[in-house]
Image (tube, rainbow, N blue to C red; front, side, top):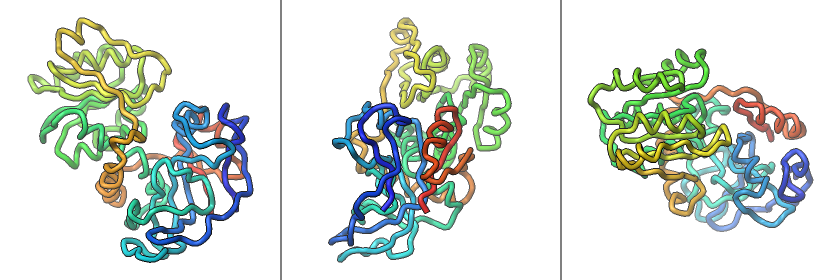
Length: 319
């Protein structure tokens, strides 16, 4: 059986390779055998292979997400059947032609574009939990985010709209403004200091209670300026690799709270599946769509690694 495996933790281009590994065998009680068809390749995967999040001893198969077909079910499995398309559990070493998974972590996906369903594993749950875990938002409330054109950003727009929230969306390229408005963003602005006055003018006296940061550096300061008194800033990524720029006077004067989010934290494990189930109909309806830059067969993994580091959503084809 083919799988993508690292020989050691380090630079993914040096340590990741295609290997033959033992097949997982038949599913046991409460288990399902999944034939993986597609898997996203994300920046998080690069960090995992670099050893930033821990993991099993190397050599090991890696992979944080996977989408595929139920090939066999073990005894006492009733929630999915052979032939159903499902998501592999998040962070379950998914980059293999077949994996075993507990049936209780799965659900049958609706009919939709496989390239979109394959991205349901981590980005929509991240967005859903960012909206629910840090402040008690009510319908009509405002959220501001940067990196709005990312997979999480687009998911946040769609899920926020479903829940009745309104979004201010900051992007770093002018050509993305109309695209993100079409994706459902209520306000879409270029991410620069001038966006603060524009957003405030549009929002008026309404409060901006939650800010979501994936960029870091000076972009964080823009979010801090937009947050209302006792607002919460949550960061889940750092696209620039720069430290968060936070004016301590804003932090103190507005009684702000700053938090960090990681989907793999133990506290969120039981909440990922319900968030996936919530987001799946948004993909089926087309309300949530993330453009795919390229799909690579797993034999071309080196090309895929190079592409994802340059930007754009990349998927791996295991079929």
